[in-house]
Amino acid sequence: MNAQLTDSTPIGATAGANTQVQSVIAAVAGKCIRLTFLAIGYTGAAVAVPLQATVSDGSTTMYLPVGNLQAWLEACPIKFAVGAAVTITVPAGGAGAIGNIGGAYYVDGPN
Image (cartoon, rainbow, N blue to C red; front, side):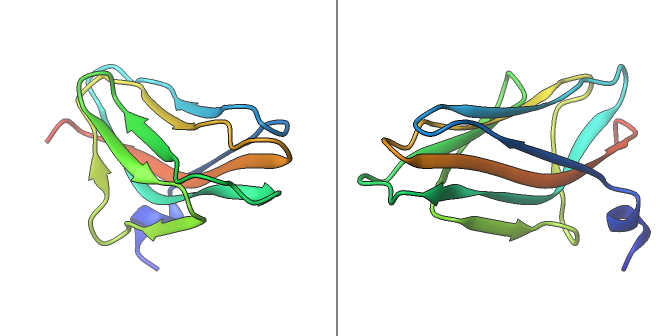
C-alpha cells in the first residue's frame, strides 16, 4: 500500500430508512482534501428508481449513481478546492432503504 492510503482518514455515515444521509469532511485552511476511496449505496429494501448521490466542495458538484458503488481512487485521488469542506450526500431511497456512505481521504498542500 502506498503511504497516502495508509495515512487516509476513514469516513462513514448511515441514517434511518428513507432518510437522506450526509458525511461532511471539514475544511482545512490552505489545504486540499483528496478523496481516496468512496462507497455509496443502500441496504434493506430495494430502491425503485435510479438515484444520484452528490459529492461537493461548494464550487464543484459531482453526481454519481447510487447502486452500491465502490471507487478506489488511491492512484488518482479526487482533489477538491483549497480550503473547502467536502459534503457527500446520498438521497433518501424510499421505504425500507437505508443509505450508507463509506470512504477515506487525506489532506494535502494546495498544489
